[in-house]
Length: 340
Image (cartoon, rainbow, N blue to C red; front, side, top):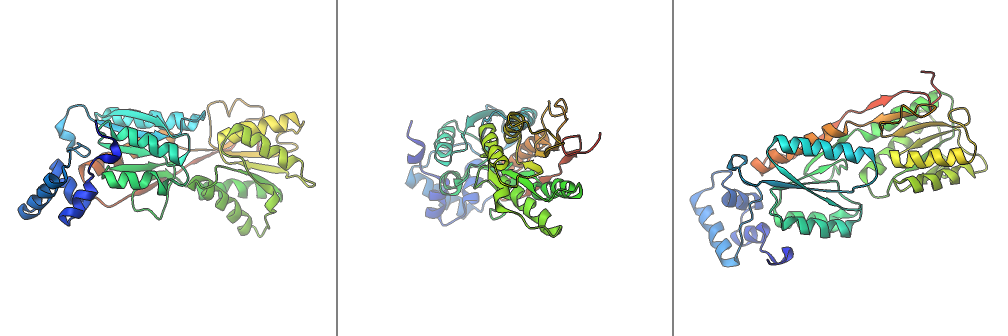
């Protein structure tokens, strides 16, 4: 089998025939009527270039072994587990098989993994893109003309199908809650730089302070790299400040676990010595003492919506792009200083 990068792509056919990629897709997959003259021009370009038909957007009524891919970091995080289950469940209901690759949140590794996925003759792809994916994986997907949907991480500048949550508004709500509890020095553990989720949650943190007329001390914001070790290190840095925070906001569940470990090791009690709120709920958050106040994402629903958008895109390559942001739920418990 020829290497994925050596195959003639729909984009190359479209350029040769002077038509859009979606028109080539319609000719190849029979998803919409195309004028006879245009169809003949596309078919001539396909023959001249040696285009090999890959069934990436067949009608859903065609049956057979229909497969979609999922490119995602398989991190040790309950959020990703629930998201994958939501995607898999909806894909099964749609009669689609699912192939998953771990991107490791690395743009180069992600691009290589997606290139390997394309050899499986996918009908479409759901991807939670790594930082800097615009220069690696995104051009590959566009060159192949493969229908895809972005999940969890949203880029407003891209006109593609995307599903996520209201990160900014949710963060504003919990930071405002801490401010109303009287906290003026609130630390934040931010996620992997370059990810839209990290940027949106950080922006919400700053906006909440701005609306309350409070200045943010830059020393109170630490990068925790979306991981437990990173959260532990960043929390230790906050505790070593001459004037440490009286409250903290962690940007995901991995960093929350690391933060709790660092606070316990330093003998800092929650919430008496340090109030704590966290993005991402997880099954045992209610079992901690004190129980954790968290922002719960509808992860399974996000996954299901992503599959629905992908099915729509596979059926109609010309459909207008949709960005969906699902609401979150703030689970008010005890770690923020509230009495349950």
